[in-house]
Image (cartoon, rainbow, N blue to C red; front, side):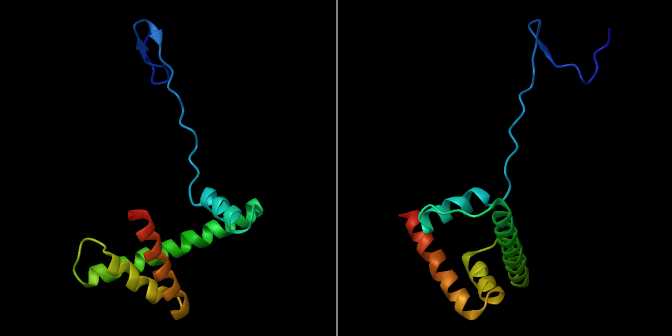
Length: 114
């Protein structure tokens, strides 16, 4: 009787069964729900709306990181810095939004580090 790749490993005469990891939820859906509950006093949105917001956030994240990497490459740097992210934010967002985003990010970093 040959051992096949489908047979579980045997340890001390006992077949060992591998446990499956739960499917990890990709994206920001849990955070979107948490932030909305805090901001709107317990109100929520549909799963489809959360999916749309999640895709929007993912798209913005991709745009910002791509632009930041372009800036770092242009400066012949191999590591992203806060300046690269700030400049990318100024280039990707409209002027009013970028200023607010940079100030909000600075406040969040200060709260996180203190």
